[in-house]
Image (cartoon, rainbow, N blue to C red):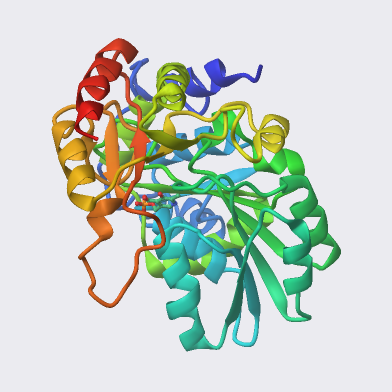
Length: 388
Ligand SMILES: Cc1ncc(COP(=O)(O)O)c(C=O)c1O
């Protein structure tokens, strides 16, 4: 067991500096004044370690940085205004024209776009590979490969990569390894334990946990954080506001409670679905039926509340009727990680773009389980499943 309690309740908080207040203040100031030229000069010398200007650092945000770095067991962390901004900074910070990126084949959609549409404009090439087999990554390596982008598990079909093997391979070839660890959160997986260089998060999910803040985190070594701070972070300026940082600090207080509760309920629902005659299969890394169950047990400590179900249904209309019947309990919405249960029925992607065939069958639904009672959720699903 790690020292989550200390990190989430105390680390980074110097209560002596603010009247002993238990909840840290929101320092809603864009800039900071100095009493001497010497102190002003010192802040310019070490902008990330000082409070000079809030696009660089801010005392409320600084508390959050310290907690996130400690949770991911890294030397330092940067906090961004979104997970996408954190991912973009991590990747852009480690490529230049002529370089090559290897990325898992089904990453988060905007990671895919960043690599396949945005960075190609600047002469960066890429290969997407099936990361479930390390030999695919090895074969994709080119002399100019500088980044290996992982997402283990991903957030729809949950494929894993062997993190230790990936990190070792990347190190042998001088490649920076980056992972999107949003699915597990730092509680259920610490990629640096396996040698991964940079860990990024959509903090809009579990880390904030209340569906009211968009933010991202980038965790890594001091030198990597300094490098990205002085380039992508300061130039793009995608920072979190002190007010949002304060909301996230509050959300973090209950991270273990929320995740444990969500996983406990999810296990009950997965068990229910696996036994239901209208279910074709369930995908959940913590279910014994999961194709990479053993690897998950080796490198993860839990799986949280996100899983998918493929149903036995004959038509899109039938799936729509079933999903609509649950829409007041399983809110139909993107994202996950809050207190409320959610669903994304993939039939929503059918009849969307006439010339595109969705990659998943219309019978597939991704669920996120919030903090409601398992019996309450199962009772409603049981009733709705009669529509299939
Ligand atoms: C796996 C994953 N990574 C990254 C992101 C992007 O995060 P944000 O929405 O905070 O920019 C998301 C958002 O849904 C996600 O699901």
